[in-house]
Image 1 (tube, rainbow, N blue to C red):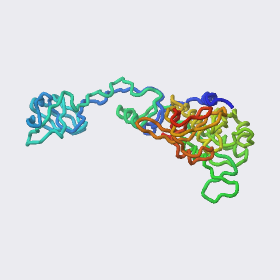
Image 2: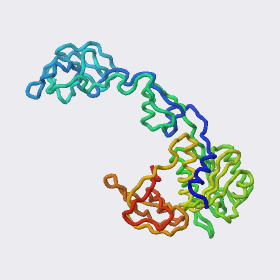
Image 3: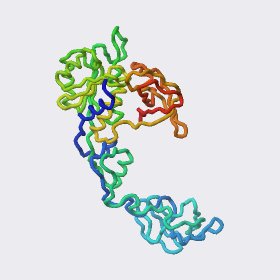
Image 4: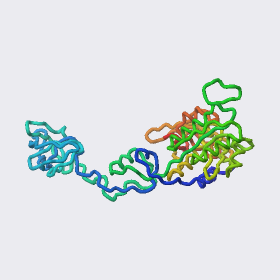
Length: 402
């Protein structure tokens, strides 16, 4: 067996960042900036009001109170999108709507909730300070300011900022296109009754969903029967259309599998036994320079292997700097006993949180075939080699769902 860190580094070393492309911001969510973005104008572009109310001179309201409101003459209205047409003088106010530009002479806004209209006047029952409820020009960004650095994953908020400064295309690292296929004459698709020896293909659907969740483009290459010619054709098709290929099964020591035979012939593969449980067997290499991930066939092992190896490597290809999920520490809500076997164990767990303290409990059965518990898990707890941990002891874990 080889250490987990060695296997992870071997995979990462052979996966290179993909080329930079320019995309419309409408298509950029979840992608990673390839270069810094700078503002070319100030945001907000002009002084404007943060509330509905009346643009005033703060000095006119210095002594205003509920029992003795200030009386100001209303000389106009400014709607959002309209330009002021007159300045505010002493003893005057202009009705103003949220986002509208501040008129000359006004230095504060009194909220509409503090006012009462009396004919052509407005009564304002509290004082305001200079700058109250005013958003200053350039308060958020000035021309030349760095908006986002390179390496930032673009969220909806980031895209809104880009639109606000007139940037509608952005340079990003291209997202990987990942092909997924399953092999085996025992696999079927559909809800028809199973014949003896048949199983339904769960791994392919799981892997496709994991890849889509994590922002990768997927191509479903389907189920391929146990035929070397068909498998080689599927691999070559995947290599021609994809940046990476993910498959599962046939990677254990001693297996004679058609996938193994094909990949050994057409690719540069390494068949590894990693010191972890589940997901000990792992195949990884390249075919014509395209990374190929051969994950274990047991459903839970396949998902754990994806989290530990495929996901970090694909994130590197996509330009991310944080490749692995962050490790956190909680408290074991139960005893977890295990024997020393030279492996790190990854346990499916549910996380309860109370005032920022994580409590870690089992999500159910821990067999590598028991997918139901994996579906109900929030995280994987990390049990180092040894006798396990006792209830109440610190326990490392990482979340596996966003």
